[in-house]
Length: 132
Image 1 (tube, helix red, strand yellow):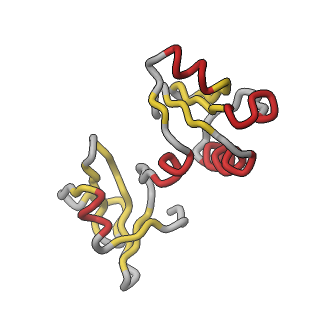
Image 2: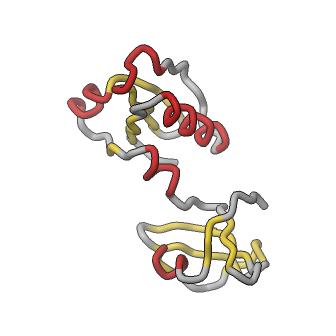
């Protein structure tokens, strides 16, 4: 889980997209209200808990990485499934820094024994919306 992340949601649409993704990822919810801070609303992630507040508070407090909704939604995560143009699929089994550790092709429970950067994987693979 991510520690101390603040994600500004400058529109209700971006707020809803982020909340949907966080729910899918199984985060525990605290009550959030976009109208209270409007375009200055930030959703925060602290371990496995979600909070919200004014963007300025997170910037002033320090210790929070500020990341846009687009950046957050574009991240690859453990358990994500990638597919190449021929239909071969791999699962991201682990991530360490900028290195991804995939499964063997079409064998999600077996480690490939290799590691790649995202740039390397993007040459052949695209993220799917599938879950195993």
